Amino acid sequence: MVERTGKAVMGMTLAGLLPFFISCWASLAPWQASALLGLEEPESIIGFWQIALLSLLIYGAVILSFMGGARWGTAFGVEGEKPKTSVMIIAVTASLWGFFAAMLGAAGLVFGDPMNGGIGPLLPAGLYMLAAGFLVLLAFDVHAGYPILYVRLRILASLLAAATLLAGAIYAG
Image (cartoon, rainbow, N blue to C red; front, side, top):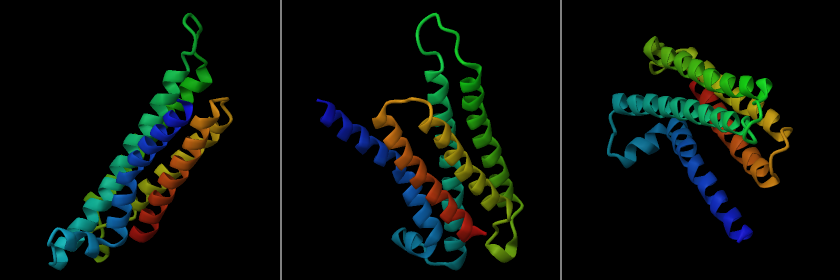
């Protein structure tokens, strides 16, 4: 039963990473991704590239906020216990960090550089912020005393998510 549960959880974790992989691939090779949709005009490819970067940014912010929420939920522990303030601060900070990273990145698209496909330096900065957020939250979670299966999945998911965010940021910058 435990082995089956572990496989199911691993499958769901990997499924949750699919939007990171797809958005990263589409941001690194927008001509390939847009060709699948029949978009061949240069303007369409640039627009698709912008959408891919924006989807990477938004999904990264959503999942970082989700991870903060998961930590927030574990802070309550046993009925009647007072939640640890430090855990609550980390949880809320992760969600706020994701929000501000998304806002910063979106500003990079709104106030973009026409010489760089309409992408300004704030969009990669938002992606870098998200990658840092995943890695910092991972460091806290690894040392929090969570079950080993959870920690292993967090390490895998956080490193892969951060890698896709960094790849998108580097390519967009």
